Length: 251
Image (cartoon, rainbow, N blue to C red; front, side, top):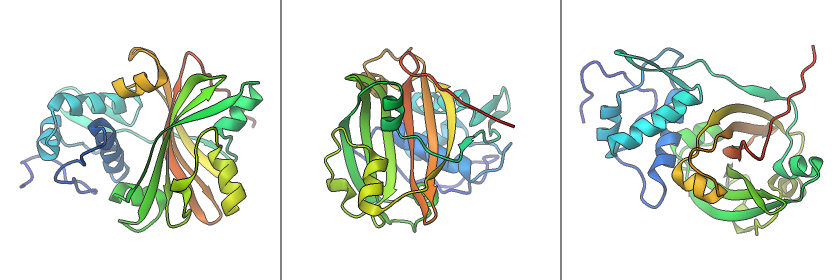
């Protein structure tokens, strides 16, 4: 399909259509984040109409995901001009605290309920995030994390199936991902880079977390790595009514 006049060139090519069997909002978000990652701050995003036509989506679906990314600070709008890439905003730390460690430190009993485990070929965006070749097998683990039996977070983690063979066969009920990676694959000295945003949940996310779509949440996303490279990347959605953030800084 020819590119409409005045529409920007993209560093990441758009697929002809999205995959069946996965929420289109999730796929669109992943695609947009990948597109944004290949563009410089201030670059203009294609219009909602163009994205909707290229990906065969309802324009309202595209608008909802773009508004979400605007709310998270990845994009910004200039009325009458378009939507543009914002400067990246990251919360960085030298050490990673897992959900399990975090909940135990708060005196709560951590738990997990598996939503899905998928093994697929890495999309260009996923390959770039994990530092692997395109079409390399990747594992996406989606779980609802609980504290004292109450849903607290919806956690999505993406890892290389080549680096962690058999990870998709694990019983993920009440398991700590990072504890398992340390025990079975010797992964230690993990550092992380995370971005934290205030967002509203999508409808299916709200259902899994047992909250209303009007309940504010924290979206925490980014990558974790060790001396051998990227360990995992992902996005976790935390209920703001049940979870707070504590940051200590020195200087």
